[in-house]
Amino acid sequence: MNLEKICMQVIELTKNVGNFILAEKNNIKEKNIETKGLHDFVTYVDKSSEEQLVRKLSEILPEAGFIAEEGTATQKGDKYNWIIDPLDGTTNFIHGITPFAISIALMEDDKIVLGVVHELGLNECFYAWKDNPAFLNGKEIKVSSNKTVEGSLIATGFPYYDYDRIKPFMETLEYFMQHSRGVRRLGSAATDLVYVACGRFESFYEYSLSPWDVAAGAFIVQQAGGKVSDFNGKNNYIFGKEIIATNTKVYKEFFGSINEIMNK
Image (tube, rainbow, N blue to C red; front, side):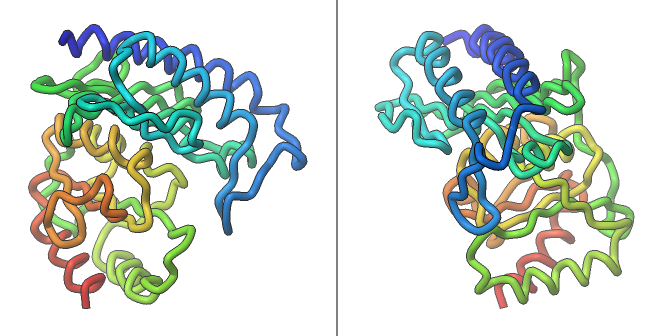
């Protein structure tokens, strides 16, 4: 399988679907917004974008199944599955702010082998495929070389549900506000992850996430030289609903703080 060729096809697809999303940005009205849950929204743009992605990805790799946020396609593949979020950052999108992104990963058996995150606000396409480095708009990227949490800029996201863990989560915010360069909440986990990959953030963590939020971005972080785990230091971050992503030099210190506070 030529993963580089497939990756280039996926990039071109995200550009085309991205143009559709941007063209609809100013057409969203309150009547077009559906509520899936508290703080969790979907629009016809999400659904139409996913339909376009599923249709074209099926042509690129007919044997692959899908794990898709809006449920446009539910058929699982025996070996290959696309994990897609047609619009990560829908709340940002409907309020006219950035970032918001298309996120696509290809899973072979239980391993991600390709990831593309196209952040549409700045027209930045981050991508990688197995056994190769990560790229941003054609230029190779690496995680930062910062060695300490004190010198780190940290990204996170607020949970949409599972508020049973909100108290320890708020403790982590308090800790990092006092022991780092600052904490940012952009509203798109896929974007947060690729910003770790290119060195804009040193670390990202969040819980109550879905596979389509993290699969592509986490893979890109790894291909850019970073480290990814769940809050226990294990590898259950795609389906385990929690993730830590850092450069390798701050991982031990950063993980230690998250593990100690979140797993009391």
